[in-house]
Amino acid sequence: KLPEPEGEEPKQFTLPEKNDTMKRVYAYLMQKRYIGRDILSFFAKRGTLYESKEHHNAVFVGVDKNGEPKHIHKKGTYSGGENFRINEEGSDPCYGFGYAGTGNCLYVFEAPIDFLSFLTLYPKNWQKNSYIVLNGVA
Picture 1 (cartoon, rainbow, N blue to C red):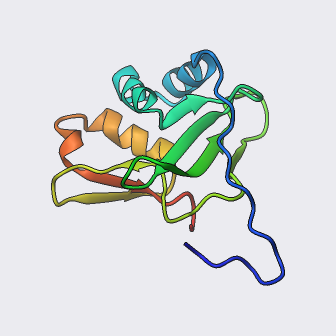
Picture 2 (cartoon, rainbow, N blue to C red):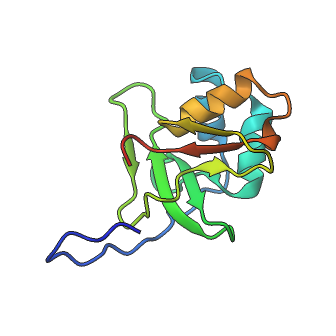
Picture 3 (cartoon, one colour):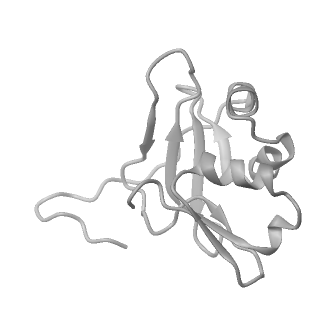
């Protein structure tokens, strides 16, 4: 974990509340970003991709080796205005959204949508490999 700047209290890490559905996230990621439904469903079932209740953002969850959430990246799903994306305060940048496979290949991506796009384009045996998202320069 990276040290906190001097004189500042560490921010409390909390998960955004989940929406009852993922309609806006699925619509945005499938219709605007052309991500495959099966790829989205895989991460939704794992709980590492969901829709936030308050603003209907796509929430990408980075977890540790025990599956405990450690990092949150939010991406706006509204396509009519400015682009919104943010790493949640209190997140540990050492744990980006991704997937740990059993093979010896690691793919590195700048953003969650880059990662999901890659899996959509190259779905064959993707679960053998490992993938990590850096969320910019984190």
